[in-house]
Length: 363
Image (cartoon, rainbow, N blue to C red):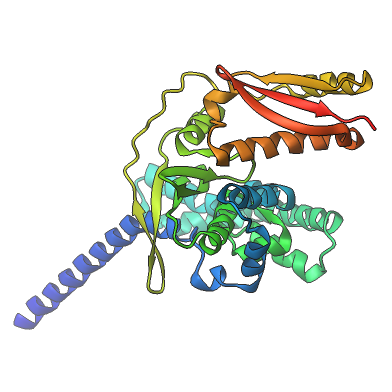
C-alpha cells in the first residue's frame, strides 16, 4: 500500500516538474528568439566580417556608420521570397494541425485529435503537395534566372528561404540577400568589430527587427537603408508608415559575457514631440526641375524638402552626413550622366525645412 502512495507521489512530482519546465520554456521562448538575432563570437570574428569591417572603417564615426548602412543599401537586396514564401510555407505546414485541433475542440473530442489530423492529411495531402511543389519550383526558376550561383547553392537558397531564424552574416554576404532580421544580425556583427566599446541595441517588434548604436548619449538606428536617424525619430517614422510598428517595440541592450552575449531590456521613455506625419518626397518633380536647370545651364539651383528638419537634425554630424549621402545617391541614380555636372551639394536648414543647394560646373 505504501508503495502505491510513493509511486503516486513520484508521478505527481514528475508531472508538476514537467509543467514547471514547460511554463519556463514558454516564458523564456521570446528571449531565446531575440537572442537568435545576435551573432555568435565565431560569426563576429569570421574572415568575411573582419575584412568588410576594415573596408568600411573611416577616420570619423559619422563616415564609418554611414559606410555600413550605405554598403548594405548598395550591395544587399531585400529577400522578398524569404519574407513571403516562408510565411506561406509554414502556414501550409501547420494548417492541418490547426484545423484538426479546431475540429476536435468544436466537437469536444480531443481524444480523437490524431484521427482528425490523419484524416485531413489523407484527404488534402495532394493539395498540400501541389502548393509546396509550386512554391519550390517557382523559387528554383527565379533563383536560376536571376542568380549566377551553382545548382547546389540554389538548393541551399531554397532551404534558407523556409528557414525562419536569422541567417548568419557570412551567408548574407555570400548570397547578397536579406530580410530585416538578417540585416540586423549583419549590422550588429559589423558594429561589434568597428565599435567594440560602444553600447549596441536590438530593437524588436513582431513585424520588424533593427540594430542601433549609442554615440555620445544618442541612440542611432541602423536599419537597411539611408538615412540614419535617432531612435525617437525612427519610431515615429515607422509608426507613420506602419501603424502597428509604432507600438509594441522592445529595446534591448546587448551585454557581452564570457562566451557570447545577453540581452537586457531597456526602459524606453518616448520623447517624441512630433505631430507631423512622415511624408515621402516627390522626387520625380524635383528631378524634372534639376534637368531643366541643367538644360538651361544655370550655375545654381535649390529645392526644398518640406518639414525635413523636424525629422533629421542636420546640426548632428552623423545625421547630416547620412542625409547628404541619401540625397546624393538619389540624384546620381536619377540624373545618370548629367550628375557629373553637379559640382557641390550643400544642405541648409530654413525653419522646419531643409534647403538643398546645388552648384553646377560647366567646362
